[in-house]
Image 1 (cartoon, rainbow, N blue to C red):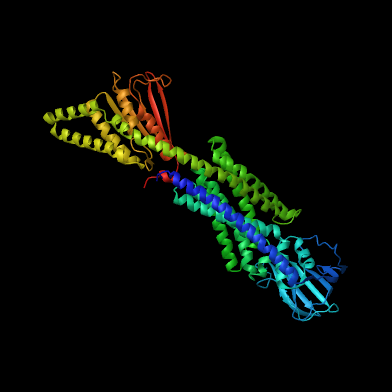
Image 2: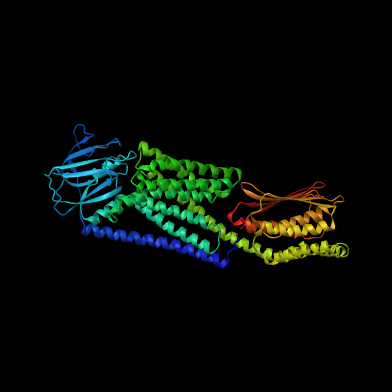
Length: 612
């Protein structure tokens, strides 16, 4: 339904809220980094952490033994069985902790032939529900010396694995203080943790702005909501890229599921965000795409619950589906940009293209592995968010300016409302209608009673327009139009013909819009023509708009020549202004002298314009 524009006071409140939120984010960031700095200094004085290496040899897939060095590079991501044997580079006394960085692998650690740690498939028999995710594992040492025999057996559990996982296991082993290990783990993945935190603050900002827009009844609240949810899931995704959280929350399976779900959440809300910028069948198609993504995610989660296939192993299948959906989103945005000259879709297209390109290259990187995982997709999310944030700030500014213009237009409309009503109810029309009813009283009393009823309905409709500022149903508007046409047909039974074709009527529009155009067509087009003519009214729905056409074959006029009949002609301009202000509609007039006039009322397809 129509929303009244917010006042200047509310606009000032919104501006103050945005300034307050920006200041709060900056202050919180300063406090956060100050706390981290103090924690860093404290850890340097209180905690100790030492690197640990395995010195010895290794064998791939049961092959020959080779010397293990710092330059050893396991280049085959399909390796399923690697054994490293030798001894640790330092003693690990009993009770001390050994930290291993395990990334979606099966790992078994033996000391002097005795197994002290093992992780692998959740279920045996080669079931694809295999790994517990990305994690830092803490092992309490039974007392290990440099002379003890160490055997480390590991291998990939997924075909979409990254080779760097082996290096992370062998090169990032540590022993020492657990808090210092947490700090080092966070430092190792500092860029992902920092960006995740920035996205988290950004989420808070966007969700509060969405709430403000809802309270102040400003259009675009859902866009802020979807954008806020995109940044929320992006924040979760960046956090789960790092194994550091498992040192605080020892739930690697949960974090692994959150990693997969966050990728799907980003895709779902990007599509919903794009749908807010589209109309017609393009918007509907994106809503169907959203349903498809949710359905696929639900099926994958059910597979995870029943241990059929875990979410991580389905990431590449998700990526292919999301790529196809992204291409469709780009096509829809390009269609509206090129065909309908939709400015907002053009802006979103500029933001979403870098994200789509980065996602495609990231998908290729999963097979070729020329970069570390997630870097490209992360850059795409950052660029998308930054570009959209710029556009968001611009939208807020435009919204505030439009509210000011709306208040001015509203005041003008209120001032013209009485003039419009008077222009609709001309004294000579009232006199002629009453004269016609009086004559019927003597000859056709039943018809006179019916005419009087239509006359009262007509007057009531015009008087209601003085009070009713909301949109009304098309059916109600046509009821008023039919009452008017009945009275004119009573006066000019042979001169006035009426044709009405209602193909679509489930929508709302400002009162006295069709009525004003029809009265102009009858009074200035048909009645003044010696032979009379026909007024045709047609309503229809297209992919983008709802169109109401009023056509007459009356006298017509030259639109380029201003009328000089002494009247103000506020009716048509008032209709045009109300259509633009209340529902974003427009008015098109075509006329030719001696041929007639065609007027089109064009309303955009919007949820708030649908009838109830």
